[in-house]
Length: 533
Image (cartoon, rainbow, N blue to C red; front, side):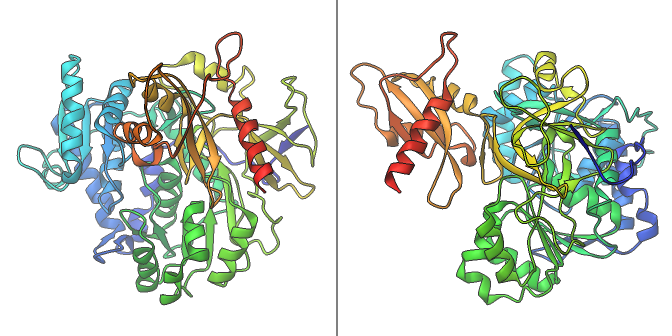
């Protein structure tokens, strides 16, 4: 059967994302749109809207034109949305870059996305320059590196804001033009650029309204990275569209996080499971008054029910809220509403409007299953991505001819219409909400001269967090140690991608076609865990 949202359909929103989000900024005027959670500096809606116009004018003056790709490589800050919406206002596509990227990773994304401009901050400038040097060596130099907080020889945010020319009059086709190009590994393989149009992300905001819409003036704490689609959608696009106030932190530090809640009387927390774990168990939480918190929404990775209950109990909440989606879905399909008093325990919520869901048999037949039956989740709706940038075959493997996106996740719908995520088919590892592609780590491992073969899977650690584990075949005569392997990988990837454990094996199990049989490795790990329990 096909499950359909119980809510009335919403019309598609054919607006550029900056207009969809900031179209009511004049109405909110001097209300605070953004607050720096560390310094207390505020940006009003009026100032934010005016800054976006000036940044767009400045970027146009620098040569940015419609269809260009601008890379945004920065931690969370109150000026991040000025750069993001300013770039889209100038007609550019923004590719958001992980603030943990190494020069090699950054260069790879710049190269793959075709970015010509890079916007960053001074602490990241050495990484940005190293990546730019790699592109220049390839004969594909960047047009410019803009440093938001200023650096000698680089245009700054202040320079962009000082532009005297008009903001460009750019004709944007919301249904075709790509607003943002985040990178995701999808169900398998290396990171790919996910083409999200202005229409898909703006419409997804309207879809989400039925279940989650912050109130005007509601204070939402933003510590999840804006470069991630979850942070971008739930902590910038939706709150700013609704007139809420976003309290911004550059990174997660539990003491800073709790202090910001206390000082700014934060009402809404939008987090990933590692933060819920810290709130549930760490003693530092007891030192702060967190009584202003009215709800906590957790997504990005599975949340253990016992952990959710412990976290809710400590915060004095009736329950935690959960949501479900993925980058390729702009990103929301399901959420538990803050107004619900009795959601199904452990569920990720009900389906947002204008969305259809199929739960299909895991035998590959595509046979539809009913309520209470577990299968792979297929989604269809206006929030489905346009496709993977430059990868039509990967797009075709993800979205079928009828428009169903095959998520690779296993779940079931209960009798009340709530979705429960059970497991996943895909090989992607989710480490603390970050996506880690096994193929990417395997490629790094195989670059070591003393490694002849390797495979990577996710295994749970003592806290239940999924961590990358490498199975490594050493070259004959090699005395390579596990510490050598982890150190080698750590030197080439972002910290969240590091291999945490290593096992040396005689051979990596593979199919006749040469495909790594990760299911055998996972089964081996599960058997060990069972024997040890």
